[in-house]
Length: 334
Image (cartoon, rainbow, N blue to C red; front, top):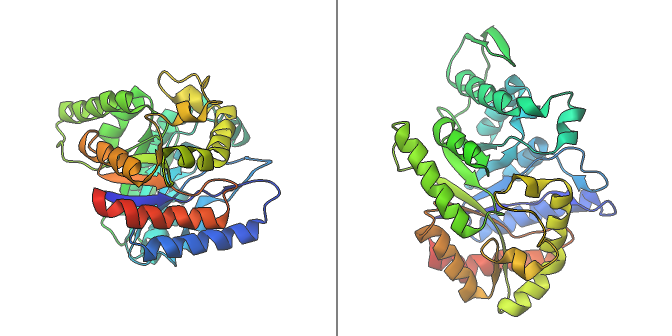
């Protein structure tokens, strides 16, 4: 199982954002030097009053520190973007990273983001599907023509092409229909950190069933996002992580994130221990190893994407979390 780190790029209004970028550079170097496989960045717009660093320029900067690690987006909000621009930007990203790009894309869920882009949220599925087809073709073909409901191209080509034959495109998906879409349109599925693990097992079976029905092989990469904190034991880990992970999810639920999780009302957001149960990995080293092995051996995860830094978390805690997971857990789960 490969292990990558999702680098949170969301900061409070009063934080020094230039210092935050320096902190992300330092984290990337530490992640590289302690043996992780990848770094990942997400995307949101209009996060005010919180600050959210934008994905493409930040990923390019961090890629310079990434060594041989893969670099990926988790997730780029493709329905809000022009696929020609994305194809050009991320072909360049693949070139400057030496062919180590993975493009993770998702639908987006915040109505205010779509409204500000003058887009109808109801069109997001169509824009995603058309956008992915355009990306694949522009990366692998010349003289591309395309006629869709949302996008039209007439004999266009991009240069440079990616160094890879085509960067892999992974779909973030939470709802059943989105998971079935990932099975047939994407190279891999990225599962959310919010779905309980029993429900996740059902969705994993759904994913493989959809691939089988489409005549696609069962052997496929499957990524799972996990909020993770390593403490000395379960009790102290929960106590240390709550001010940071709990605050993050209170913000996300206020944005409507819980509306997209099957069976999730968000009513338990105030009970951190309950929120983490069978969702996040928070505990002592043995607890964390056990839960990671559950992801590998029961859920079939091939790529674990762990978040180890959280809004407001002091630098020393972030670095300790990165180092403890690398030294005390990863050797037991690969």
